[in-house]
Amino acid sequence: MNENAGIGMKRRATKQIFVGQVAIGGGAPISVQSMTKTDTRDPQATLAQIEACAGAKCDLIRCAVPDAAAAQALREICAASPLPVIADIHFDHRLALASIEAGVAGLRLNPGNIGGREKVEAVVAAARERAIPIRIGVNSGSISAKLRARVDAGELPLADAMAESALEHVRILEDCQFDLIKISLKASDVLTTIAAYRALAPRVPYPFHAGITEAGTARAGTVKSAAGLGVLLMEGLADTLRVSLTASPEEEVFVGREILKSFGYLTSSYRLISCPRCGRTEIDLERIAANVEKHLIEHDPPLTVAVMGCVVNGPGEARHADVGIAGGKGRGVLYRKGRIVRECKEQELTQALIDEIDQLCGARKTSSGPSPR
Image 1 (cartoon, rainbow, N blue to C red):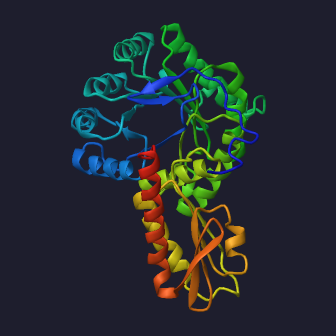
Image 2: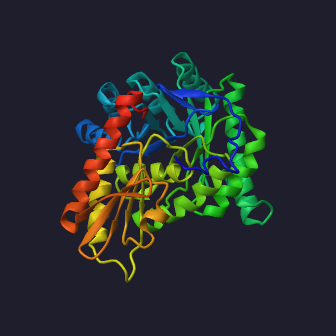
Image 3: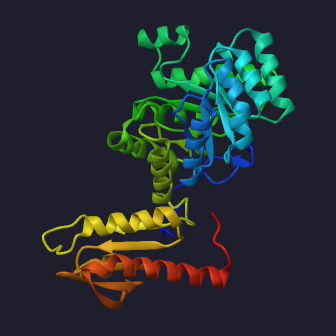
């Protein structure tokens, strides 16, 4: 466990809602979401992607619903999905109604763009009957024309306009006596996103879905998402999150979980420490670290594991690791809690560490029962 977890972080108090069996807000663990990138009208391809996300330890999945055929396909998808499914709706309230009938656990929509009052009331009534929450999703590009004009005129910062837009949508749902609400305020710009969440936080009691929208490719988008989500996590302004990458949804889940681990929010998952290499490194550290990480991803033991390049700093720098290795010239040492256990040849190091991980994890399960997810 990260000994600094929680330092400087006090999560904002919110109403708690449930998306399927997943609690959001009200002190519940911060959940990780992703979105399928298949054609929702193809249930088998979509379910295959959902299964992959579940294997990556995703908590919630969202599917685009662009038309009636996609809404109809949700029946098969929801019936077989291992994760609660959220329908992403724009403009047509009938798609929201059809998605609810298909069995979705949540909706993502903007009440202001799906029609008149009677259409909103129809969606709210159906959602209330099944206790299905609605996420109000405001992006920097989706604010109303009136608010956009004020932003363009320099009268209102974009972040404040996003917060005002969310409040407009919240009032619509509250006027319908509906409060199973969560809110997102996303921009592709990190500072605008942070400012928007800060502006809205004291004005509503609802949980926040956090993220940087359209963050970019796997490398650049990971950096941008980590920067923005890091601030929001430090300020307690995230109850569920998605990392939006031009990459596979499993990669989004992996990055989201790694960000949570960095802040001590996933203490039942593995934590990998590996050094960046330097002129002292005399083993194929990159290959060893990649193979160890693959094993950790597959098995997710609740351990801190270190892969270090040399014996000069390895055991000392990773003294808080449960288990680790440090390399020498064609050799290395296996150590536990900073204390050397034995020496191994380079070609034996990876398997020796994996065996030690499995043995240590098995001993913990025997003594304390199965580890929580």
